[in-house]
Every structure is written in C-alpha cells, then in structure tokens.
Length: 198
Image (cartoon, helix red, strand yellow):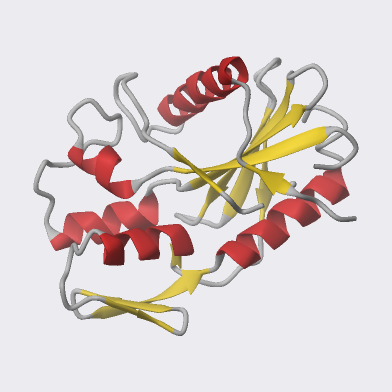
C-alpha cells in the first residue's frame, strides 16, 4: 500500500498533538514540569484514502539549550551531554489525521533508547500502545545531521551512515528505515482507519 507523507497539519490538531505529547513525556519521566518542546516539520513524505500523515522532528539545539524547554540541559552543553541527549531523547513523531474533518486519529512516536520502539497515542482517548521494532543503529539520521550542521564538534563527521563524534562512532538509523517501520505498522495495525486501543 502506497503512502504519501506530508508536512501539512491543521493548527488546532497540531496543538492538541503537542499538548498530549507533553503529557506523555511527563508520564515517561523525561520531563519534570510542563514547559515547551520545540519541533519542526520534516518532509518524510503519507495520504491514503483521505488520511494525512505529517512528520515532525524534535530538534536537539532548541530543546537542550533553551531554558524554557522541557528537555533543557545547559545553555552551553558539553560534548558528552550533547551526544547523550541526541541518542536518548525522542526525536521523530508522525501525526495521522482525517483530511476531511481534520480530526486526529493517532500519533506515532519513534524511540531509539533505551529500546527501539514506536509508541502510538490516540489523542481523543489517551490510549497508548508500544510496538517493538527491529531496526539497527544508535542515533537517528535527523539528529546526526543536526549535530554536523550545528558544529557541536568541528571534527565530527557523517560518512556512509556512521557518525563520528568526540572520538566515538555511532551507527545512524536512517529516515528511510524509520519510514519503513512506520508504514508497516500503519498497515499491520490499521492505524490510519482506527484509533489505537489499550
């Protein structure tokens, strides 16, 4: 089944997703107090029978360096803090909405630490369900790209799916592999047609 990922998202639905995402973060003890989580739309291009699937990447810089962020670490984080946050903090989410009504169906959040999994949340009911994924790598592609872009370590390199940072090498989890897992799970669990149940 073919999907088309889009970055379109109604403002109201987007705000609902972000609020629920924040509550989920609190529940999993990644934040202490409800503040902000910075994200930006990503073109990982899914439309299937009137369903839009939009993607967001939770940026490293704005979250770990911004005092107002729920994931704040330091305004001048060390290299050790940077790579730890890059690997451990959730990074990519996918929002499934009904194109016609603009109603939220499910939100899918990819985790690479401590275990690789996709957490599916139904915004209207609050139900969540975890799905393990068989995918190799240490750090997601968007995070690896941001580390290079922000020049957190001038000697860092990203070559052939390997990020070398602060003297260590990390295997990159490609956007292609994440998209493949997301698409397969949507098809298998019919997440574009019904809200996830407990």
